[in-house]
Image (cartoon, rainbow, N blue to C red; front, side, top):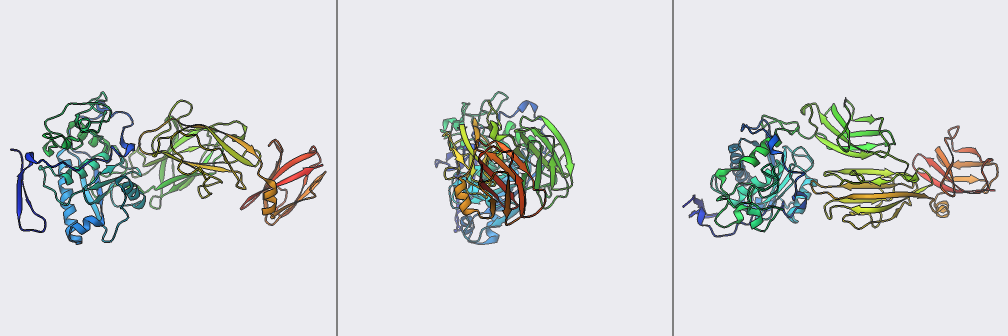
Length: 564
């Protein structure tokens, strides 16, 4: 006969009882891991052979921050106490399921929207909006709860990353475990993804990339392999979609998913052990400045910590250096030109060899002299997951860069490149440079900025990559006649000239360069004295047309120079 469920009817003194095994209604819960393509595959199969198989309570504890949408607040009589008690009871059931599999969790905080919330899009849009809106929170995993029951979405293995978020659309009603209810099941399932577990029908188990069960495939959610249909499924399965099978909370997560979750959370640097404190994620961002061919400056965005540890590797993981710093600004030296590196950062709170955040960067090269631009995978590999690359390219000769792609392949609609006409992401986007994705070759792009620079920003999501890109640069001169009309802040005279020219400007000049018509550097120098006026000897220059680039504090101006 199975479980007998007794429940109170909402807004009534009546009760209802039924046999759980005889329910005929279709379970509405679908995990958005299928629709959200970033979760379709793991970065390889979990290495179950290397995971400690001694079942013991996890050392670390996952603290969950909940955010309740306005609709769920309204469903609870628009009362803070009622909705808080409702979610606390649901969490206690979820925590019981995890505790039964020796996984420690705790409720850290509940935030309730008592006015209209901003999460009114699709489940995928709501999750992404939640991640971008709730940048900081009190907990290790943030879970957005909405109503009614809809597709639910989570990022896979997201603890201690900027993707540590989940979204669940749930019913108002639930049952206490071990009785199965859609609300408890959906929320525990999405949380399980964040803690490292894929679906049981994923090709990621048994030590040989096969599925634990075939419920997902039979229900129409194939992830690439088949499996047996069990008598009852576990929490990370889709067996609730198979009539007569369902999910049995008494089976919990099952041995392999539970083992993987325990191992995952016990290797996360930001988690604590006492369910009340943790290292958290004080580092909110890493940026790179003053990049040259052999050095790069690092800026750490962290208003809490006072010391940090770092590890620098090449993109294939080869160790370059390790160190500690008491300054949020430090320099990396002895680098190779045109090379991708990954910098890992952690705090003294994190484990000895554990880091909280990493970012990639690319050193400079002689872009105007045939140095190619490639993605981090190089000639034969794909770019990586979770990459955020911001890189500004300056002309090394001439006055303006043109960026020309020869190969281009990004995961369509999930990985994006943004291409800016200027020296930063604050510069205007090229008209065809916004959210470039897929495999159509974009561009070319020619800078019209006074610096001649082009900036790219590339962002890849948590999973699934592609072949990336290959590109080349060419350098040419800006339309000087237009520049002369607009930029009266620098004057060159006489022009045409024979032996000497005088340069005058409205502000102090930092440096100047002179190029011939082919873009070849002829002369470059810093004025011998500070001031707004100086002379330049051109007596050794052949007759012809030249470009003089004058760099001041706030702008760079190009001037046409004729030598007779």
